[in-house]
Structure formats: structure tokens, C-alpha cells
Amino acid sequence: MKRKADLPSVRTVCAEAVSIAGLPPARAFLFDMDGTIVNNCAWHVLAWQAFSEAYGNRLSERQILDWMGATNLEYQRRILGREVGPEESVRLENEKEAVYRKLYAPHMKLAEGLRPFLDEAHRRAIACAIVSGAPRQNIDFICSGLNLFDDFPCIVDASQYARSKPEPDCYLTAAERLGVSPADCIVFEDAVGGIVSGRRAGMYTVALTGTNPRATLAQAEPDLIIDSFLELSPAA
Image (cartoon, rainbow, N blue to C red; front, side, top):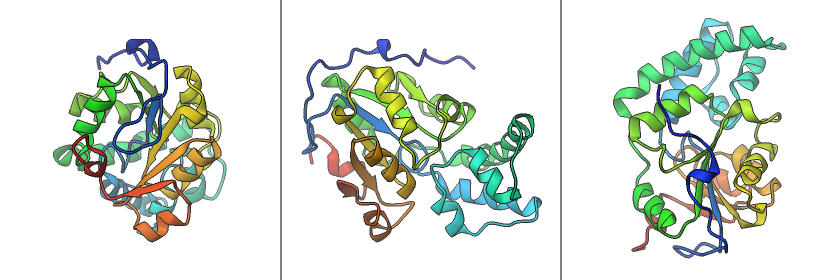
């Protein structure tokens, strides 16, 4: 699959922090993917339930949503109740993600209001990155299907950091690759673990409802909670 180089040099990062749509000044916007860029969590839930049932430990919807943001390896450990070796983990990941992609492909679309928000960020030279616990194949699946490679020249996937969300590793990795201070980054997340990850990285966090209700997200103490990116559009 052909894709754009995922290096920050593809688009110049603004030299000074700037503000849009009432957000604090920033030089980089860091987006979780599942449930944030696309509202795909219902299909991940179905895929994880099928996978976990096949291995004798069927997960509830609440369990799956509570773990959102964790890597596949973390899900595998919890479902199987043991450590999983690298080769086995890849096999299990491919098995589950093939089910997810088949389920979600006919329904793929960008989160409401995100397109004008991204366009305004690009106009102001605010760098945009995907920071996800998903495998790269899933990120490419979304970016190819929705033509997003130009929007996100920096992509951090599950293979590029050691500790899963809620640890801050993924967001700190993105900031380092972009050459931006964590204090100049804004994180967009839909899961409690991801919000905690962004906060631990020292970044301003914006939580989106949908995957989780507002009351659940509020427990993670994000800086802002919104129902959709329409609230952050240039005309808002």
C-alpha cells in the first residue's frame, strides 16, 4: 500500500504557538484515531467480542471500552490471562484486526466537524499527528480510505513506544518527532486512558463524547469536553 512519508518535515510546524476556535495557543494537535478521528468503536467492540469468545473469555462492551487506547498486546494479555510472545501476538493481532476492518469498511467516515477543523489547523501551520495504540495496518486502512495522509504527516503507532496508554509515552514520542514542547501540544481523545496519557505528558487535553459519556470522561479531568469537532470549527 502506497502512503505518504510519516515525517514531520512534510509540513512545517509553526514557529510560535497560535490559537484557534477558543483553544489555548498550540504548535501541534495530537489526535487519537479510534473514536476520535473516526467513530469506529462499535465495530472494534464487535471484533473484540468475537475474538475473546473464540478464546474462551468473552469480554463485555464495558470492558472493551474501558481498555480503549491500550495496544493489542495489552488486550491479548488480559483475554488470555498470560504473557504473549511476539510471533503469537502478531498472529492474534492479524486475526482480530481482519475482522474489524471487514466490519467497519462499509461505514468509514470522518468524525463530524473534523474536516474544517483540520483545514484551519493546516492554514495556521499547526502540525497534526495521529497518536494511536492501533497497529499501523489499521491506521493505513483509515488514512487510505479517507485520504488523510496529507493531513497527518506524523503518525505514531503502537510499534513506536514502549508503554501503552495511560502512560504518556505515545504523546511524548509524537512531540519529540515534531520537535515541539509538550506544553505546546493539544491532545484530542475519546477514552479515559488516552486523556490520562495526554495529561501525564503535560499536554492540554480535549475529550470527545461518543465512545464514553461526559460523566465518565470528566473523571479523567480533561481540560475541555466537547460533543463533536463542530464546536471547534472556525465558524463556531
